[in-house]
Amino acid sequence: MSKIDFEIKKELGCLKEYPTGWKKLVQIISWNGSKPKIDIREWDPNKQHMTRGITLTFEEFEKLKSVDT
Image (cartoon, rainbow, N blue to C red; front, top):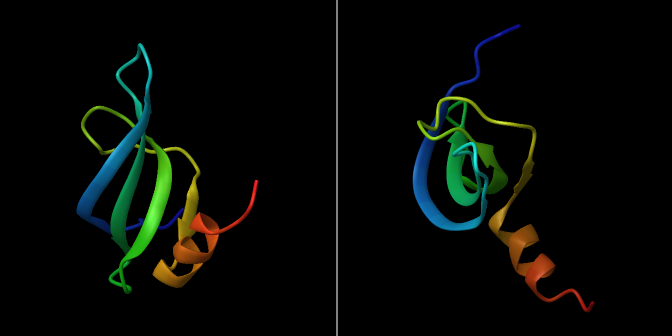
């Protein structure tokens, strides 16, 4: 498995914190040197390990905010 590089540009908020210390975070992240995107996934307390998540462009994020429920 190849190494994935990431740079957390900004933490926007925490959606949930688990008793284990892991958190479901909304962040702006650059993956493998690409343009930063909105990212939602769970992270360990040291932000070194993560679960699968969802990554959205800023345009997709804006559309998501306007979806009717």
